Image 1 (spheres, rainbow, N blue to C red):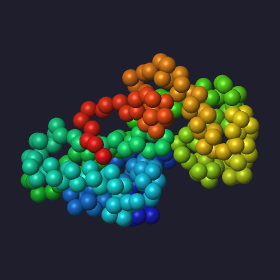
Image 2: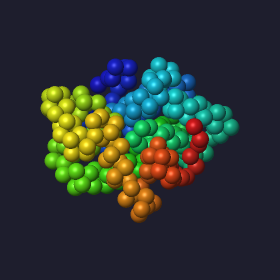
Image 3: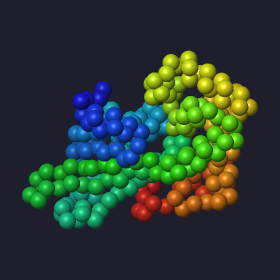
Length: 237
């Protein structure tokens, strides 16, 4: 199956786990996109939205293009396939509600005639902190099961339409859920709901920090905490 940009992805794989785990992209050294699975497409769109819709080469987030460019330059000084058994370049991209880790390496055949660039893209730390925030919000604000699901998707930055499609409900029904959630959290906007729920949940995360939890950088700056936990050799953006 092909996406709107003509890149193929595995439909069955995407249906099995549409919003979990890492995504995979395969490119040529000239930055031509050969393959992108559904998860990679979703995370790329998340990065692009965060970067005001600006792309490189028409379809790639600028952070991905920059990482591929760095791999291209490294290939010139490290052309041996054995070098790339140990080399992995990384970048962290901060989006509104999570941090996304890009891991890139070169795939070189034994004849050195063909080179491909593999990018693995995944959210880091979001699972644990988001789960804790949602659980605490459900208890504190007495959210129903469906209201809790709406909050989970809201924390991912999804629109009403995306939430409605995922829950197989009418968009107007999602708006009604937001109305109830707003009343329970004493807020009047989506942003207000997000900030109230996250502030309430992450206050506890700062009080009892875990090495596995990565607090969103935008929140950490406001709270005076630490944003991104070091993840090996992460290249600066």
